[in-house]
Image 1 (cartoon, rainbow, N blue to C red):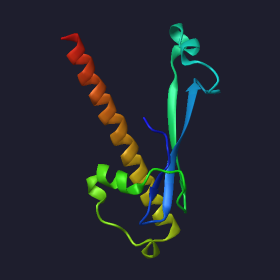
Image 2 (cartoon, one colour):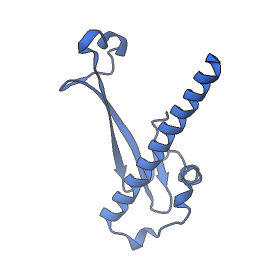
Image 3 (cartoon, rainbow, N blue to C red):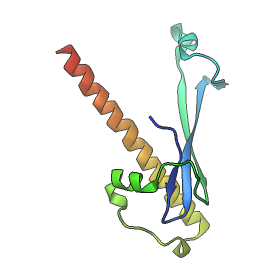
Image 4 (cartoon, one colour):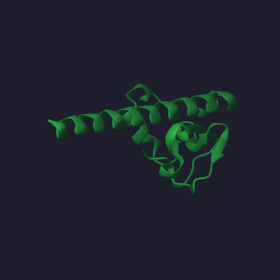
Length: 120
């Protein structure tokens, strides 16, 4: 899954995931290998995704046009000036959340199909 930021040109905003891994109530530093953490009963990890937004676009972010094609429900553009900052934030986070969820589920589904095909 791509963890890059996404621009939404109509809102002139951007959003991206911030990920963390926890074991119990302890955050795990990214230098640690998951295989070293997952051993026995104490091997349960939690993967957290927080969506961070900016009230501006980012130069190195994915084009919102690609996201809008992926999420056909957002074909209509919204005039930035018609929304408050809070409304822009909420809409930006909602779009990014839908995009990330669709990416995760579509990739999971594709991998499930590939695994089934290989086992037949």
